[in-house]
Image (tube, rainbow, N blue to C red; front, side, top):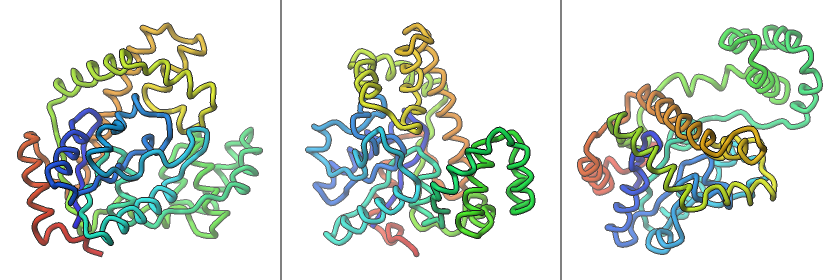
Length: 303
């Protein structure tokens, strides 16, 4: 049995999922669908479950990799499949929890994700001084993909060409999964707090994290080395700029809170596009629905 709990950052997903699992007396285990909690040591600023919480409830997909390494959506998808199978094989139920939309779609919809081709990518990156030429190549190989991106979007052009050249398939051939919504494999319950309330929570939470030692955590991680993806995490990115001397601490905190609020709106917009999400303003009503799904035929994963 499985159910998913989705919504923007600071909406209360983690606390609600923990309560659901705790009250199940071990029958429900949590799979964290988050692109940053996979990194060891990135704890405070990702709102990762604490050691005490993990002693009470079984959590999966946390601390999978060193923060100096990259971790792809495909790797996460494979890890999530293995974790869910482990829970189900022991007779348990799964609650997927997270706000990272792409990771969620990859897992909940079992998306076909294009692979990584590092050697191809490295060769393409040597040609970045001719971005116009790279875009023209993409127009030839995959006009549908080229039509959906700006000719100046370096990251997307490189990724599309990497897939086209590395796999022999058009990058656009993988894209329909994100633009269409088929029958739900897993029921999704969404938390939808008022944005004014969410903004207040984000502000209070980040300042509490600072009191809890987030700056020291970021400093330790920076000394050990951070991957490009890990460095982009909201909150970490701004505090790294402070440590590099680019921002005062006050400005870094203010910017981190602003970017967290923007992230919450992007996440809400992502989930709003999915007509299968069942939205709840009241966390108690959402909790009852989660429990009902796991106790009913709605909890079966439909492949």
